[in-house]
Structure formats: C-alpha cells, structure tokens
Image (tube, rainbow over the protein chains, first blue to last red):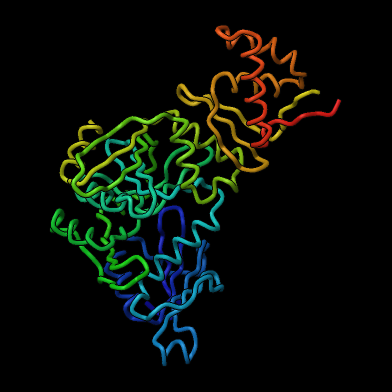
Amino acid sequence: MDSKGILLQIGPFTVRLDSCIDVVNQSVNNLYADYNFFEEASDIFTDFYIRIDRPNFYRGYLRSQVQCYVDGITPFKPLPIAQSYPFFEWGLNWIIASHVHYYLLIHAAVVEKNGHVLILCGEPGAGKSTLCAALASRGWRLFSDEMAVIDLQTNEVIPCVRPISLKNKAIDLIGKLAPDAVFGESYPETTKGTLSHMKPMKESVLRGNERAFCKWVVFPQYREGSKTCLTSIEKDQTVIKLAKNSFNYNALGSLGFNSLCDMVEESHCYEFEYSDLNEAITLFDKLAY
Amino acid sequence: MKLSAHKEINCRKVGGNYLVYSNLNSETISLSYFAYCMLLTLISREMDISDLMRSQAQYAKDLNNDELLQVLKKTINELVIRGFIYKLPD
C-alpha cells in the first residue's frame, strides 16, 4: 500500500483507507485479503475516506497516540497507537451509521442460509457477535457483524461483510469452536476490553453482492448457564425494538417505519436466550431447513 | 370540542398487531384495535367526542355507554399526550 491509500469495496460502500502505520496496513492485508482492492483510484467514486495517522508531534510521538480522520474531520479523541487498527473499524462504523441515510441501518449482526436472512439484534454485550461468528464458521453466510443494511425500496438486506469484532471471552470461545478461523491481532485494554477481529469466510466475501430477504428477526441474550430457549414475540414489539436499535430510523421518517413494518411482516420474530453455542447452532440450522 | 389526527402520522397493521408512527416526534407505539380504529376514523375526518362514541361503539360492544366514554377519554388522552391527535377549539 502506498501513501495515497487503498480502495476497498465493502458491501455497497467504496472506502479509501490511508495510513502510514504499519500495523493498520498489515491487519487490513490479513483480514481483508479476499476483498476487491482497487489499484486505480482516480476514476472510482469513494464513499468514505478514512486516514489513520499520528495526530501531531506531541500526541503522535511523545505520547504514542493515533488519530482517525474521517472525510477530513476528527470525530474522536486520539487513542493509544496500539489501537490503530480497531480505530479504523470504529471510524468506519461511525461514518456509515452517521452518514448513510439512503438505507435503513439497524445495529445488528446478520447472517444468511438457503437464501434467507437472520437478523440478530441486541444491545452491546447481548452476544450477537459471538453467535454471528459461530454461525458464520458453520456454513452460514456472513452479511455483517455490525449492522443490517436494508434497501428502502425493496426491503432486501444488503451484505456489508467485514471482519467480526469479538470481545473478551468470545475470542477463546470462537477460537475453540472454529479452529480454522483466522484472527487478527489481539488488542487488550480497549474501552470494550480485549478485542480481536475474525477474518470473514472467503465465500461470504466473494458473494458480497448477493442480497436476500429477512426471514427471522432474533433478539439474542447470552446468559451463563441458561438453557437454549427460543420464544416467539409479537411483531409490534419487534418493530419497536428494531427501531430503538436503528441508527437512522428517526432521520428516515415514514420511509423507515414502512420499511421496517414491511420487513417484520414477512419475518418470524423471536427472543433467544443461550449459553451453549453448539446448541444454538443446531437450533438455527433446524430453523433454516 | 373536536378532535383531529395530525397529518404526519402513519398507522399500520403488522401481523396481528397495530402500530402508529409520528413524523413529528419520531415516536412509534403499539395500539389496541380500538385505538387503531379510532385513529383511522380521526385521520379520515375531524370529529367531536359524541360522534366518535357512536363510531367506536361497534368496536366495544361489551361496554355500556359510560364505560365506552371512559375508555374513549383515556385513549384520546394518551394519543394527545404522545402527539398523535390534537383537540380543536370550538
């Protein structure tokens, strides 16, 4: 990668990343190895430009900090330089969530099987990324670990495949469940604890343009020692919960409301409590057949 | 006193449930069938409470007039507070 950065096609977005920090480039080359990297940047429209760089002499060199410049602005405070790569991922999350209002965006993990999409929506710490990584490592196609991107005209869910962000105990748990999975560096002492990214399966990346319709909306909750339990919930409550977890529902107005209602109308809606990932995978596999 | 629904609201049936969304305050709430029918009535035209009572009686056949009036007033109050309908001065 040269100093002008690289262009990455991530789902419907073209992202330009520019960094002079080696660990960022190495992590991207490792975790995004199966992606479409554009060599010629001149004639391709770029949706977002992210630069990960040292902020200034004092913060950058004396204090070993790093800054994330998103389309030229700095929405965050600098972080320790050891967190340079997660800073890129967080910056990308932020710019999509705060700027993309031509899709409905819901904070959720999304996977697909047999042409049907499963949306796993929940608060941070509910265990949606862990469940998403487990399903993705057992034949489900990854759409996103971070957000459901929904076409407002067709209600199709659009893949936005990126590395899965795993935290704390989930890193070992998925490492044992999926020994072939490729992980990036481990980042201790982030605001979310220890963080590591799991490389998406190659098939998910190569099929990154294949949209599908939602069939299941699930609100997972990991609870240590709990039995695997899937419970139907009413569709009105599902719409309200999804709306609360949407990044841009309020900005979209009636368009977002109607899109959400249409999607939920066609979906089965559940709450899901679990502690055993193998049981959870078996249950969702049965659901998909 | 007449009642009217704000133009910026959107009512929907989803599955066996009823929802309303307000573009004014971005609030989405779940409705009973009774409240849903009342809102649809007020979206179609403004109405005073006695007309609304006559219109809503078909959705609450097990209630007598006093009970219906109480339910109606409570529903109106909730929907006014949440910004879905408003009271017009006489």
